[in-house]
Length: 289
Length: 256
Image (cartoon, rainbow over all chains, first blue to last red; front, top):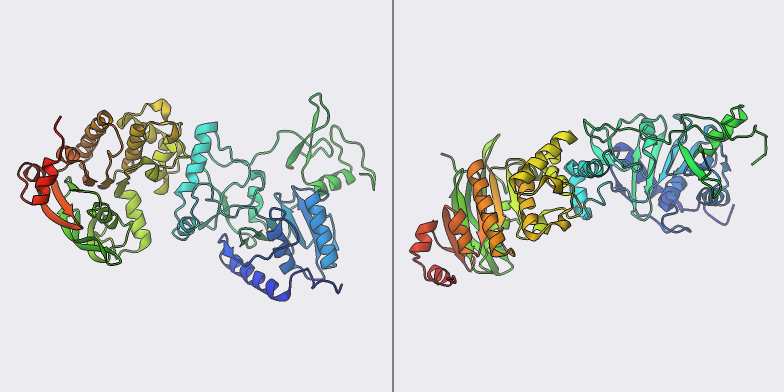
């Protein structure tokens, strides 16, 4: 590779991003401003995550990208190709083999280890954004730990819907200090945020990076009489039969037919390879789609 | 008795222009102080300085805090001051939409201060919200409606409920009846007078409406060009005005 510097960004930029990452790791949940660069993709496609990945990648890394859990959607394929081309790193679809995983809106089902890094693409890093429009004010609220407003949102949910209806981007409190938006992951994934892997969050348009070191205490906000409940569709996967994974609903015809399948494609594939078959699944064949 | 609020020599300048100067008074618990004057006389500047919305150029605003006794709120750290603002103090804006969250239901608006001081039980927060809506004469079935669906008078009453829910000891009011028609004004004043007496609140009320201070205020300060020109008991000042400007003010009120 001579056309690009390794992993697209120049070394000074990567250094700047690494400083932001280190600061983020030192203050878990705190949004660190950084000088986000223009990337060759539109905002909203993961420019923040891509920059964080670029700053973390080494030539020995194995890279995996998922979009809503899937390895084969446009966003995942294009970012994987991007780093195959600009960094020449090995890529994989297997969660366990990857050392760096960039994700959009999901956490893999398989538990991650201490040797792995999970990079999130974040559209709006400020959990208080839609409650308090002023950035000056939200920063002050973070610095003074004034988080009553976050509960106003949950209060509104319960008064309108009878339960906390926020299903994704569910606000969490990190180490008893900062309230953080865990990016739009389903709240099903919230309990996994205290994992063994390093988690980095990059928001390109908003120019913020924040991070969770391994085994950070992450508590989902709730009320005493309406405790936090991670939720998923109340079915088993129709392909692999898993009852413990987050499911996508797929409409299969115009007559109301539907099936529920694992949103984590690698998890589903590995289960089927191990011989599990769901209600509508065919036995697994190597190489079949 | 220790005054709840001691104001000493407050001055605020906008460049060379005077906002207010040489203002000082004591406010005792349960007392309501009215500040009147024409537009541009520095009433609102003074109120913003007292309530901590605007840093004055000099002076002291000493508040009798529950934990540490009298403290100058201007030299207090910001977290302390903001804590004071959501517990012991309340601020009623002239326009309800400045003081309310328009996208949040009435119950959420009232509950916000409770949640800000750590309430985390939905049922209790809601119960208190409904209770307070009742006290400001808003029907309990409006608790989930947004303030946009309320009339101007209801919005103002909702703002008052939202401010009083944490049981503050001192309320700042900036033209609380401005922009309301006279019958709604009368009801609001009646309600405010009841609440102030019942809760033993102290209040500083800024208004240009002499009828408001006549009804609510124990003492009165008349301001002109940023300075206090006359002060005293409300009835005394209004019935026997000494300063020329006060005489003008009192005689300008239309008699029906």
